[in-house]
Image 1 (cartoon, rainbow, N blue to C red):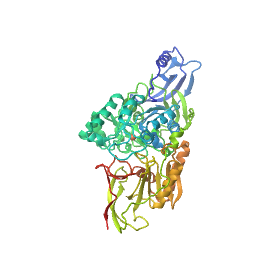
Image 2: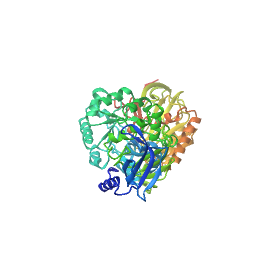
Image 3: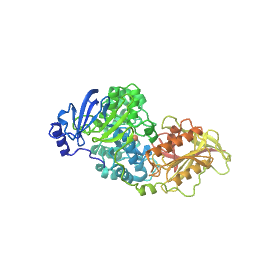
Image 4: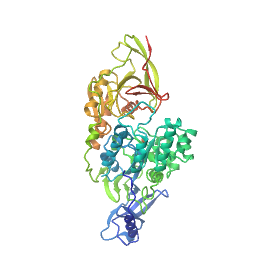
Length: 586
Ligand SMILES: [Fe+2]
């Protein structure tokens, strides 16, 4: 699926003839300072010739020019290969795939490796097929990967809208350009033989994306032994160093929340051909304000990495990792003419973007073909099947005066949570100081819902979201049951989205009608809605609205310790069991 990017033999033969001067080039870019990612240097004042989609010459290129050859003078500018995102989830941008491709192309990203794990949890392979359909008309080179663990863990009770069986994945894997992240490390550590055989069979067929969060020593060896060659869950130098010495490629993230590059940028300086940068999860407001892979390269340079090395890690390193360096990732003969013209190298100011030798963006404005594909209605209409009559309340014993309950405390700045015991007055109308209600409502028609208690989630009012990893039920966190209820109702009415309510009034919202994950609106409209939500949250006292939203959306993720809230109850991750809310009654 969107798999084979290899050029046709006749294209290569024509390119070769053009190099020999037997056919004129279609395009010659003159006087450019070219980023040579192979040798790690800039070659000043050279010409680049392009025939069809292919670069045919880097040098003087005198034999390439004909009377119909178009010339572009790049004097004083730097020409870099198109940026490659080694690992991303398109859904996290909140943009539909067609808008995503325009947004990232306008920033110089010409290739992405996309794991549609989120939509697969909502809509199964039908959701993945929808992503492929929308992307098929775009000049962006997309390697769409089949998500191997849907749900993330078969051992937890959490279920989204789809379960994709191992047989179904194995039956479809060859239609895709690779395999997404293998994240069911619980099954690995249990030595589950079905899981081990399944994962290794996938790795024999395609390159698998790793997700070895927290693994080290022999546990990491066991993961690598399955045939998994890379890992983007690397957060410390020790983890990076261990993976490198074991021949596993660490991918360094610079997204919206995961900014491992801040700590690991020295790896780019030392191993620019080996260590790729990736966004993993980045929302559209960041892309609009700061950029995509250009933002990551810029940040690496700001941290002190040599610009050529920073560009290498965003171009040739991912191409080598996926075995595509013959076609992608450098400005050299035989490669696709995917090029970024940069006016200020230190600032990575993207002036023009070319894909296959054709201009697709200028000054951050997309100029390529418009998406001819209409939105797929079933994917939109089926996204929310929540109960009509909501009853959101804490389930406390009848006649009690005071209870001790298990509460969920997020560990800020991480994805972890801790269990904490707190006292509640049974008859009190409002929850105690410093506490909030957390509700999860199934949105796939099962009728399940559950309400628990959270600690240290500072919010006045309520936030509800149909993005709630990984099952993407509706999650809501708020200071009153009225606000929680009204926020959930507003998400249902929107047909999916993120809503903030205060005193039961909707103060801000982001529409996400496509599978409850992505917006039907344009790139700039979605970025503006998200900006409005963060601004409103800030006005209501949230110091870090982005971090707050992210924390809320991760409260139901049952693969990361310690305690999570699902539509079926409180779940302790390491014991893999549902536990009671109330632990003491007075
Ligand atoms: Fe990921």
